Length: 220
Image 1 (cartoon, rainbow, N blue to C red):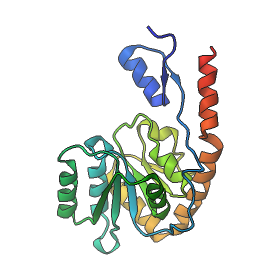
Image 2: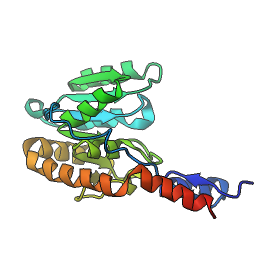
Image 3: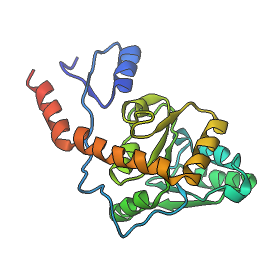
Image 4: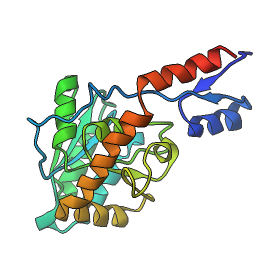
């Protein structure tokens, strides 16, 4: 058995203990805040962004359901940016969005610079995967000045501090619909979270800190 097991979050640490009866140590990832940064040539637009692999565990169907509960005149476009696609799932989401009358745009394999620009443009980054072990997306979004609305489960609880650098809600489409609509109607809500979020990432989630943490455990 290995002398040292490193995992990417406390959520993963608990899962490793529960499933394998192995005591792991948490070694968080880092975010390069020079790569994920605020771009003045990518101004804010009034749409929702969600990012992740196009597969059921990422909860995009829940997001579409939540958006469908917003009155039609105020219902925003949602952009989904993905780096991989489960066969048939794109068609499922597009059909669901059509049924729910949600304006959906899916983009696959954007270059990194284009992804950074999309984070900057988003009025709100919504992140709702099912028990995500960690999840870099909220931190990437914060570093780019995007306010974050996340699901209160899994590793998201370790990066988003409710009311400080983002919002956290239970998996309830009605609550998400209300929160999304409020952010779109009052940009000041997101502006304050975005300012705090960027500083939070720079101060707490650098790769230098991640490397120091790994070196600490390897030296034991």
